[in-house]
Image 1 (cartoon, helix red, strand yellow):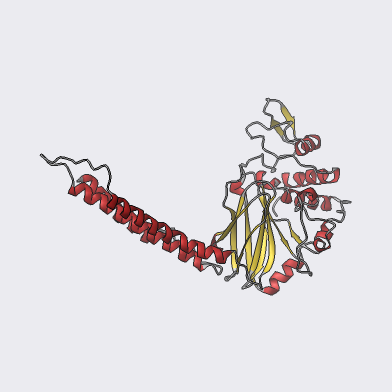
Image 2 (cartoon, rainbow, N blue to C red; image 1 turned 180 degrees about the vertical axis):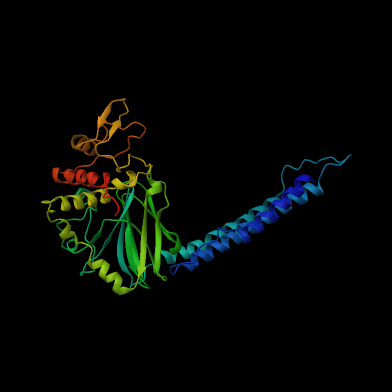
Length: 371
């Protein structure tokens, strides 16, 4: 009897938690309210099965509880019971799958008027690409990827020249404009997810996935990676800003074209060198592991790093100077700071780029005092 009462209390508590839970979905900021409807239908169907099954178990516990003189009977099979179970299970599975398949079909059926942009994911950062005036994205290939061409655009494809490159975690989109989103990964499996858009899709290495959506609400929304992609997964974040067409146009025009990004970077003064180092650090994911404010991360913080004496994994003490930083950037596995994992990838920077990154580390190591 106690078990039956406990099951009934669990049902009541679960239903109450559903209605009074603080974890309700946020308001949708795109056209995909149908995804919410499919989710709600799933909750209703699974909730109904949960209640019915637990009430059935509670009734069986009460109805067939042990009594003196009562004996159990052995029934090896019941075709009638099996037919009912198969039938109800089939109905439940169809009811769960059918709405989702219908909505997914719409999710990947892009309207003709939709514009296009690309999302590129890698450990552990986001990059984006918009077509230029030709309204066509250039071809890409892994053979073209380099520190100066991180998205791997084909330099011989005329359509690539005017593509707008966004090598940072901030994406802007115009309100009420439909977009086809192309997604590709440079390394492992990622997932582009904006919870308020109800839109998410895996970035699968070696292929290009896609979906479409229309932003319907102004504001700033978080971009998350919803697929475990390594030790820096938690820090693979970005933001999308939905704004008016005019503001979006100004932002997009301020982004460099691919042709501009291939021009030699001026580095005749310290300011340009630091700016180049900042860009390289953001583009190559350095600041995803090395914080700039002293907070612990996957790697040592850059705040106060230059000139500091670090303890290596072999208990040797090393002063962080230009020579040490150059080795750490180009051959990270040579010397590992004690207490940190050896997970830094191999980079192929030229001398100018290494000098720029070192200049940036120096700049953020001792920030200017506040007035």
